[in-house]
Length: 204
Image 1 (cartoon, rainbow, N blue to C red):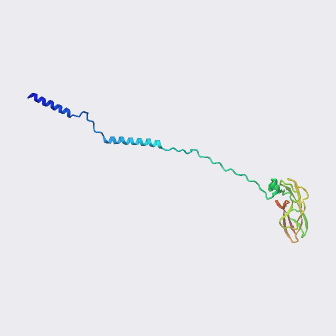
Image 2: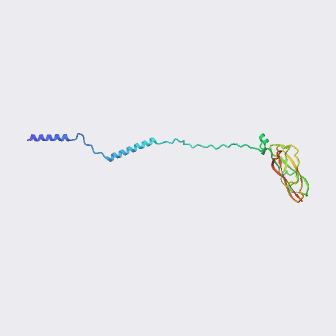
Image 3: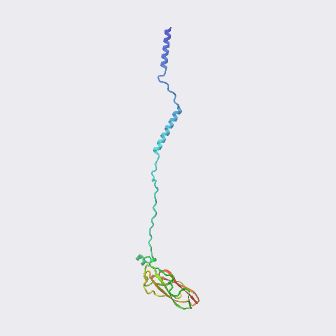
């Protein structure tokens, strides 16, 4: 009877051993931990990919400097073809100047005259241009009372910088009053130049 009991016990132990798992039981994994780890992995891979494909600017960093426009020199022109051929601007060729203290050689301003009186007005002027005054240079009427003015020929060559006396023959008006006559130098082409000179008389 005792032997039978031991036999049953041994068989039971064997059955239990056969039914027991051959590998140790693993703990149940934490699902939240797995999700967190996967998220970190995706973020890390996305950051790495973004850093690899981030475009870099190939534009130059220096600001270009602009050169100022160069001005084209303009040539001086003259309406006189002869002076243009010689390369001498008209403004530099013909010019005159005078000294206010010595310009009136005869008949100072305000000189009294009788009606119809004849007189000669003389001025001292200077050739302030680059061209000499020769034949064809003369005084011509500009404005005011002409008083039958007739310019006298210069009668000499006036070099640049030289002073010369020029005259006009006048006849005073027959009416009483103050009269002014202005005259200007002209070149052989009839072109006036320089400041006008004038005579002023009082007919009494």
